[in-house]
Length: 224
Ligand code: FES
Image 1 (cartoon, rainbow, N blue to C red):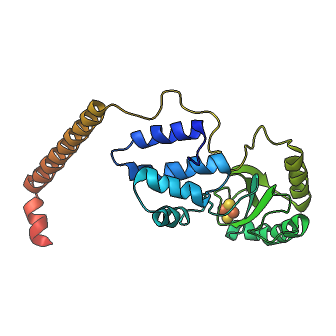
Image 2: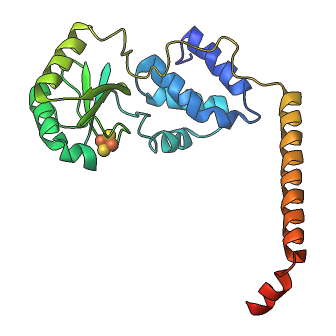
Image 3: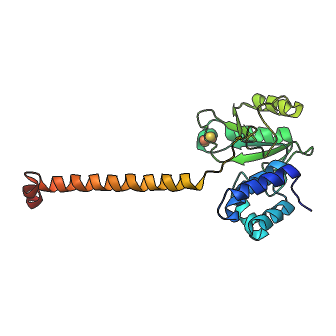
């Protein structure tokens, strides 16, 4: 029996069809499974392996390399606090300590009610709003301890659900036309690129030849 529900299974088939080789869909399928369950369960990794023709160990090896893919259960909200240098100088260590005490878990842990997983993150690319915090990869700004407590209250009450979907959701609005591109368009674009490269090479060659033949070029070469 499939680990994926009907809609997810259909999306998995559509994703695999986008690529010349099924294994190229491995990471998109990991995100898909994570969107369904909030994390990558062992059974989901086994099913992905079967779908793309690799071993479950290869799926796990790939998934465990990337921060955004989780091979352990994650709460509905993954709260990430950046402790890289700019945020460290902006009070990230203190905020992380506060968060651990407020939630009753160490970084990497999940609250007993399964709502929040706390994460100590590397640079989250919003270094001018320190200490930077994200929830399910959505920025919630640089937070004080009080701001963090308000955020947790809001999350638990579901007051931020319009802006922050459950963990694993990459997007809530999907392209209607899918992602496939006609093969003849790819061939035409590759031909146009090759033509443009050849033209650039021809212009560069002419410029080099003109420079070599310019008055004074021989003296410059001789004097060098
Ligand atoms: S150092 Fe924290 S977001 Fe860049």
